[in-house]
Image (cartoon, rainbow, N blue to C red; front, side):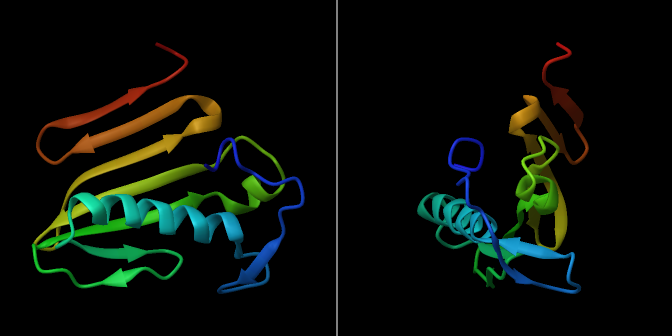
Length: 122
């Protein structure tokens, strides 16, 4: 959605902590898409999203989502942005993934098992 659906007239929807800490409609839509997809498969899990998703859940698992890390770069059409998602189990981070679609790169790590990168350098 973020890679292929960026509107030509993308604008700032709101600001957060400062005038340069911006949120676009794509940030909001991406968080809604991510949390919706995860919820379909794991309805008892909780969420903490940068754009406002916040639910407790009952499973002990909480997903931490930054749906568009590098919003200003995205806003200006630069390729250096990513989607970051992590999962916590009972308050401890157990897995994390960062995908940079415009660069063809993905980074992921599993607690106690290591970290990996895939992408154009393979």
